[in-house]
Length: 396
Length: 231
Ligand SMILES: Nc1ncnc2c1ncn2[C@@H]1O[C@H](COP(=O)(O)OP(=O)(O)OP(=O)(O)O)[C@@H](O)[C@H]1O
Ligand SMILES: [Mg+2]
Image 1 (cartoon, rainbow over the protein chains, first blue to last red):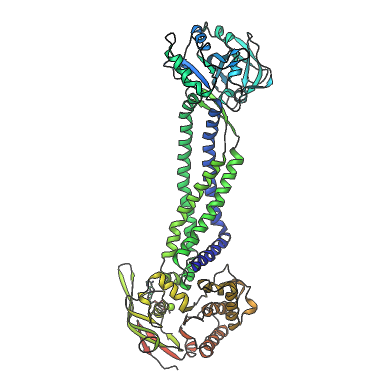
Image 2 (cartoon, rainbow over the protein chains, first blue to last red):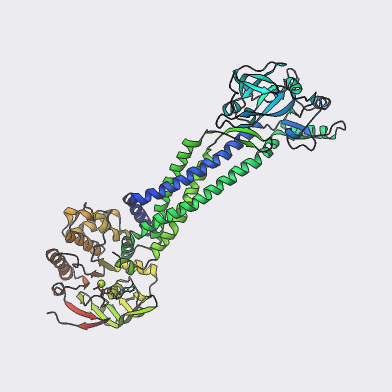
C-alpha cells in the first residue's frame, strides 16, 4: 500500500511537471474549461441576482390583499369601502399615525429605455402615507419625497438607471400632464427599486379610477399573525378578497423568470460543457499518446496500472481546477454586481436587478470544471494503462 | 532455478500476433535455456523475433503457447499486476533508445525502479550513487537526458537497469543507436557487469562485433534458434 502510494505520488508529480512542457495543448484545454465555467457562473448569477431582487422585495410579516380570483395587482380591483374595512382589521401593526395599511393603485406607463431608446413598461404606483411604514426598507437617496396631493413622483434607483427622463429633475408624461421627478429612492435591492411612486390620491383622477384601488399592503403585528389575519378577511361576508403573504407573492412572480434563466443557463453551460469535455479529452489523449513510450517505459519498469491511471487523471484534474478557478474568477470580476433589467412576465414591466455571483455559484463552477476534467481524463488514462507494453515500446 | 538448473528456461514457446485478419507466427515452438552467470547474445535478421523472445523473458509479453520460467517461477502464468511487481524485482531493462524520462535528471531516472521497492529515501540515494558510480557517471547525475550524449544516456539507462540488483539484465540492441566508440564503452560495461558482478545478461544485437563480447551467441531466424560458434 505504501509502495502503491509512492508510485502514485511519483507518477503524478512527474505528469504534473510535464504539463508545462505541453503548455500549448494544456492551455487550450484550460481556456476551454475556464470559458465554460465563466459562462455557467455568469448565466446562473443572473438567476441568482433576480431571485435576490425578488427575495429582498418580500417580507413574511407583510400581507398583500387582492380581489379574490386576481393573480396579480394588475388584475385586481378594490373599492374604497373595501380597503377601509381591511385597514380596520385586527392583526395589522400600528405606527405613529395609525394602522400600517396602504391602499395602492398600480398602473403601467411607457418610457424609452436608455440603452436602446425603445419604449418599455414601467410600473407607476400610487401609495398612501403608511406605504413608507409598510416598506421600511424604502429610503430617499437623493432629492426629497413627493408632497401629498401634488403631481410629483419619486423614482426607484433601478428604474432611474434604466429609463430616460427618470433622473432627478426629469419629467414623466401622465395623461396630458408632465409630472416632475423630485427624488430617487432605494429599497435594499428589492423590486420597488424598479417602480415610480406617487400619491394614490393624485393618481386616481389622472387615470379616472374614481376612488378605487387595486391592492392593500398591510404590515402585520408579526409573521405568525398572518394565518388568523387571512382567515378573518376571507370569512368576512362584506369582503371578497384573497390574502397572500408578500414573500409567497414574489416567489410566485419570480418563479417563471428565474426558472427560465436557470434553465437556459444550464442548457448553455451543458452544451458548452460537452464541448469542453471533448477539448479535455483531446488534450489528454494527445498528452497520453505523445508519451506512449514514456508511459510504456514506466510500466515496463514495473509501475502498476492504477498509479498510471490516477496520475493521468490527476494531470487532467489539475488543468481542470486551474481552468475552473480562472473561469470563476473571471465571472466574478466580469459579472458580479453587473446591472441588468428584465421583464417581469406577470406585470409585463421591467425589473432592474444586479447579477449576483455568490460563493455557492463559484463553488458550483469549480465542481463543474472538476467534472469536465474527470470525464475528459478518464478514457485517456484507461487507454494509457491498457496499451500493450511491448507494442507501445516499439513506437518511436 | 528450474529443473535443469537454468536461470531462464523457455519451453515450446509459440508466439503469434494478429494483424487484422492475418495471423503472424513469430516464434515457433522455441526452446531456450540461460544458465546463471551467462552473457548471451541473440542475433538474427530484422523481424526474426529477437525482441519478441526477449519480451517474453522480461515478462513484458506472454507466449501464445508454451512456458517461460525464470528463477523457478512460471511467469507466463502471472496476472498482469503480479507480473509488473515481478518485473520490478527481477528484471533490469536496457533499451535501444534509452527510454529515459526527459523531465527527470539522470539521478532521478536511475531512482525510478527503486520507487517500487521499500527502500527509504536515504537508501535509494545510496543505491543510485553506487549504480551511477559503476557506469562512471557520478559527475553527470544532475543532468537532464537532453544535455547528455547518446553514450552517456545509455549508461544512465544501464544504471537504471542495475540499480535494483535484478536477477536478470535484458538489453535490446543497447548499442544500436551509438557510434563505435560509445558502443564499445557500453559493451565494456556489460562485460564487466557479467564478469565482475556475475550478472546474467541477455542481449539482442545486430552487430557481430558486439556479439563477440558474449559468452554464448545464438542465432535466430524465422522464429527458431540455432547455435552458432562465435567467429
Ligand atoms: N505487437 C505486435 N503486433 C504485431 N506484430 C508484431 C508485434 N510485435 C512484433 N511483431 C512482428 O513480429 C515480427 C518479429 O518482431 P521482432 O520485433 O521480435 O523482431 P526483431 O527480430 O526484434 O527485429 P529487429 O531486429 O528489427 O528489432 C515482426 O514481423 C514484427 O512485425
Ligand atoms: Mg527488435
